[in-house]
Amino acid sequence: MKFAIQSRNDKLSNELMAQAKKYLTEFGLTFDEEEPEIVLSIGGDGTLLHAFHKYIHRLEDTSFVGIHTGHLGFYADWKPSEIEKLVIAIARKEFEVADYPLLEVTINYQHYQKSTKYLALNESTVKSPEVTFVMDVELNGEHFERFRGDGLCISTPSGSTAYNKALGGAIIHPAIPALQLTEMASINNRVFRTVGSPLVLPKHHSLMLVPVNGPDFMLTIDHLQLLHKDVKSIEYRVAEEKVRFARFRPFPFWKRVSDSFVASEVKDE
Ligand code: NAP
Image 1 (cartoon, rainbow, N blue to C red):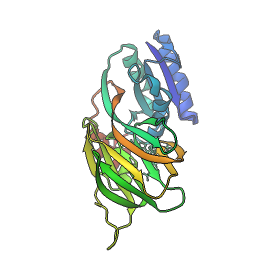
Image 2 (cartoon, rainbow, N blue to C red):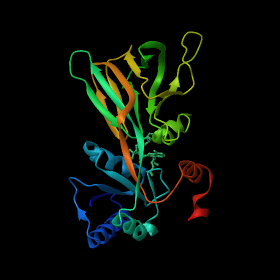
Image 3 (cartoon, rainbow, N blue to C red):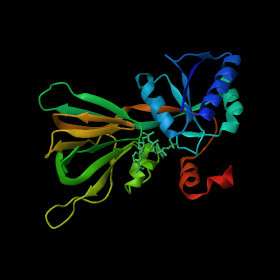
């Protein structure tokens, strides 16, 4: 099996990277940064986002596994002390694959025929660089509301524990293929109205944002920030593609939620 390693680049993550590379090579696996079948991400959830975007062109052939060198992560759920156990499990190829839904983002332009497509693992946010952000929100081709405020966040189920949670969105189990729309400081008064609650859309539903004030927007795709000019509309849907995580043991999602947000991790370590 061919493997690659993505490190957060701090001292501990780099030491673990060297150790994992040595062990896996001794077990007969091949280090291959171009076409890995398994990618070890050593750092945090942020490191796994970087690994995901590095190998986004081969999602069908690559599985990811994360080791956390800081706090427990949602994508990085192995402890540094478990590295030997993990390496042995990888070498024995004893893993199941858990696939999680992704978000497809399509940007259409006013004066340019071609659209741009992205895939997000956590979320995409959209804000105006200067003026108040004003967008018409359409659901399945029907006008839903005119949003005025700081911006909007559209997240995946596995991204629901990230920025979406800070915006008051619900935590969604990644077995549910859905996307969630959350507001960033909407203007609500006697003149302007928005629904005010996060919306959860199932697969095959589509969400479109049509600029009223624009046409330049600051768009994020996970950790990536991009300024898009001349925007005509932005479409969001649950992607056909999925991300694969290598699972070597059960670690139920709700247990991760509890360990990350409710229970003290110090007690568990
Ligand atoms: P970052 O500052 O390193 O990441 C922000 C925090 O989000 C880190 O603590 C990271 O965990 C955590 N995180 C990432 N994905 C997560 C997930 N699926 N569930 C729970 N926590 C998660 O920034 P970055 O490396 O550029 O990462 C970009 C991400 O930051 C975005 O995708 C967005 O979700 C998040 N973000 C959050 C806020 C907010 O909560 N107000 C604001 C902006 C961006 P690790 O420490 O394990 O890496």
